[in-house]
Image (cartoon, rainbow, N blue to C red; front, side, top):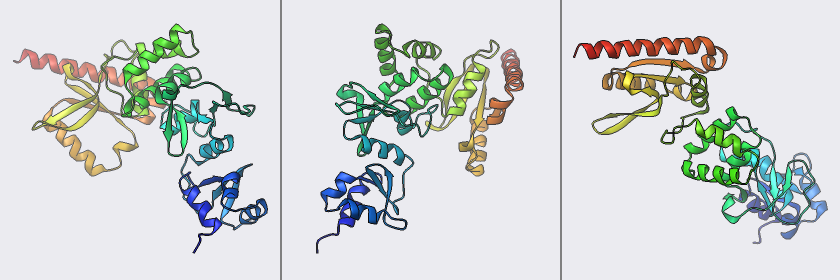
Length: 314
């Protein structure tokens, strides 16, 4: 038995985040009047853009609006800027913002659509759609974000397995030599970052680092410091000052998903290191910056005194 046109369209849409185009529907036998009928309230389809439809009962991914915009522009469209950052899971970008580059000869007069030329290595696939690669995306964002938010994006990108800091540095140098927009910002922010430093573990951790960095009394901490036992890494500390035998944990939602896990983790760290510990919360970082800085200065002062006393006793 031949599959129905509805099932054929559903099969196409299943590989396109629940989306399909008028052209794809017509290719399997739909007329425009049939499409209109199937898209009535309660029908299996819903029109989302002029030439793009979605399956009503499809569990829509969060990126579906971006997919619809790319389908509407055709095969020459590549998500870029904030859209590519959103798709790649970067911090600091405007989620839901539609930006794309059209690499063919089509019209580009709509908002968020730019004409451009991309090299093959600058484009990566994301399911059925295409986005600019992480390095291109980061440097494009540097032209639009401020220093603070671009550092959020940078650290988020460096957490991914598909990006190396050396590639970001090389592209920054290349764009700087070409006097490209955003290169100066990228160079400025990268200069603040120790080359061998690990990425922060979250946007909130990056915000904490930005809070303490300008404070002379607070030395640069080590990020994601490993705690080992029996030759195996059992935990990573958000920020550590090994010479002071002190560390700070930034308490975001990821730390409170399991209180039992956190209790065991804290017991492990205390038993393994015996270091002085402190905690900071999102509210303290974002809404009580001065008291938080003062508390960190006092905390590291106590840690320094503790180390000095211990050294005298040995």
